[in-house]
Length: 263
Figure 1 (cartoon, rainbow, N blue to C red):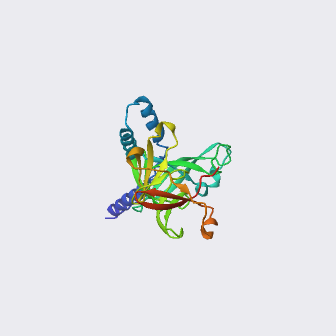
Figure 2: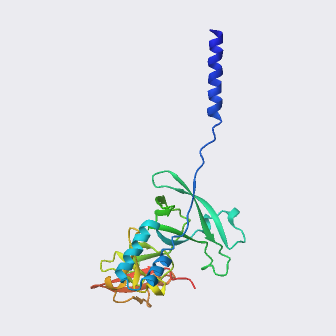
Figure 3: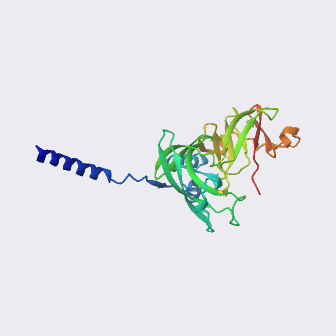
């Protein structure tokens, strides 16, 4: 009996030793790279000049669904000091919270804000996304989509639909890049942006309130004018340093306020 008991103890100790020293699982880090959809769409236009604007928009939207559209975030407050070198760009790691409660480790490139070509001194990073709201990102990495909680340190410019008093916010859009909106849909739900590539002048970028982005043929959205600046602002609006534009869409007029692009 004593020998049997000793054998059992030895076996248990051996098993305990084996399981105690198993290394913990390593968290995979996803490398997030820009989708470069705009460049690919422009190239398709050059290769097939006979494509209509609608056909080109359809091709662009298929790319967005697979690879995401590059939103230009300012992430200065998300870059730890150890990454801040004198290099033109930094490779930064960050842990994001998945909307289902898990964690996602990501690595992405951030532009050094001290570089001469840095836009307004921002720590700029392009993250490919299918949908962006104040609270969430539908991020695309390694061919898969990940719904993550948007960190407060991932900053974008916003545009807001306001009432006639310019005080009450009726709707908000997250802007993928600094831009002056060029129009709004007749129901006031969608905002339109110019695409800053001359090959794509027949297209516009459409932003929905739910954060989805899509390409549209300019001729098909009924964009009659690109709005006008409101000069005589009420005192409370004039103090904000925001831009205000008025748009005619259908039989309605809308006012949108936004941060004007830096120069």
